Structure formats: C-alpha cells, structure tokens
Image (cartoon, rainbow, N blue to C red):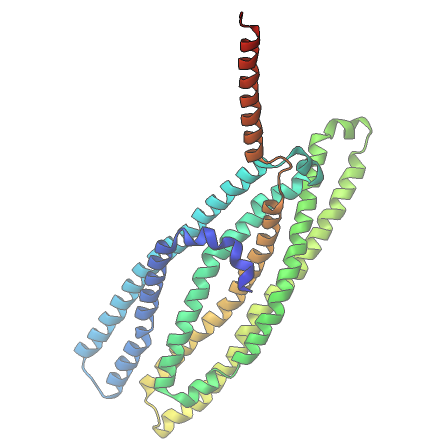
Length: 350
C-alpha cells in the first residue's frame, strides 16, 4: 500500500515543516476538544450535588473558552494542510507540463488529447484531495480515536468494550468497499477521458461533420457514451452511499446498547450521571471519525487511481534525449572549428 504513495514522496517532503505546523495545530485542536466532555461531566456532577450558580458559571465559561480555542486552532489546521495540497498540485502540474514539453510528436499521436486533458484536470484534482483533505482527516481520525478510547476506558472500561464491538465489522467493510471504489473510479476516469476526446474530435472536425451531414449520428454516439458514463458513476455512488450509512448503523447499535447498559449503571450507582453524559459525548466523538473514515477511504482510493494514471505520463520517455543532443551539437561544433582551421592552414601560402 505504501509503495503506491512513493511517487508523491518528493512533493510532500518539500513541505515537511509546514506539515509539522499543521499537525501541531491538529493535535492542539483535538487536545482542547477532548476536554469538553470532562467539563460537561464536572458541571452535571456539580448540579447533582446542588452546587451554586458561581460554579456552574465557571463551567460554562470553560466550555465557551474551549470552543473558541478549538475554533482558532482548527482554522489554522485547515489553512495549513489544505494549503499544502494546493502547493503540491502546483508543483505536480508544472512537472507534468515540463515533461510533456520534452516528449516527441509520436507520443501525442499515440495518446488521445482527451485522455491527457482528463489526467491534467480530474486526476490531478483527485490527487490534490488525497494529499490535502485525505491526509488531514486520516490524521484527525487517528488522533481523535486514540484519545477518545483512552478517556472512555478511564471512565468505564465495560461500556468502552461494548462501544468498540462494531470495529471489526467496520474494518472489513472499509477494506472490501475501498477496493471496489478504487476499481470503479479507474473505470470512470477512463470513460471521462473517452468523452473528452470525443468532444475534442467533434469540435475540431465540425466542418467535416456538417459537410457529410453526420450531426445526428455524432449526437447519438455522444448520448450513448454519456449514458454509459452516468451508469458507471451510479455504480460508484451506490457503493459510497452504502458505506457511510452502514458504518453509522453499526455504531447506532453500539449507542443503543450503551444507553441501556449505561442507564442501569447510573441507577445502580456504578457511575455518576455526569460520567454517563461524558461517555455519551465521547461516543459521538468516536462515531464521527469512523463515519469520516469511509469518506477518507473514498478520497484515498480515488487519489491512488488518479496517481497511477498520472505516472503513465512520467513513464513516457522522449525519443531524443536533450543531453545527447547538446553533446552532438558540441561535437559538431568542434569538428566544424577544426575543419575551418585546417582549411585555413591548407590555403596559406608557403
């Protein structure tokens, strides 16, 4: 799996310092965020003990302060990490263009223009989404998951085990559907290239099409291709639309189980009302990263499929090497100088 990310290593490592700043903002965002349920727990327990309004006012102030602090760090997290993805896109686009300028004319006769246009637009955008939101939400899911599970275990390990019961099924669903998303997105991108090439051919040859009265035939062919493109997208949409609700449904059962068992623990005095409330908030924190994981898998699989298509451009070698051309020109220049000098010597009078 990591081997498939290797072509992006040179682009990502250029911004390792900014990635470090972005991940630091992410850690601070989630560190502040996971304290919110603990503040809620303290406030509810104080209400149960009959605390006064001053103590509750302090809890309310802490909640507001935590929310504002989290918002500030979350802004910088998104600004830095999403901004890096735009810079990577810029660098990759320039390298692709520079490489295309080196390729021989035969490459452009063997490869359709529509396919190249698709790679330089749709595929490049998919790679950008993988490098930006894909990395950001992956790290966010990992940090939130580890921190939330640790605090849930601290509050009540029995309820935590029940909450984590759907995780194996969620992992299987992500793996199976992720592979299908990858394969179907590759088919969609290939189809998009075909449509783009068809439009280009019709626009460039519109005079010939009109001269031979082929407008209806070309429109019918375009409609057929377009319908096939729509059907392929529908099949991909079906998978992604099923994956997210399926993950949410798994954790909905866990949430229902926690409500029943946790409610009994509160009645028996095993845990306090504040602890039960905090545990439910942490459970919602845990559900969202798992649901977001389905979206991240979708982004990553799309990005990897597009990256493989872009690498086919870099894999193409020019028929004439620029360095060898410079050496040949240098040799021919030196030979010409020698000939000129030898001619001068031959024609000089004795």
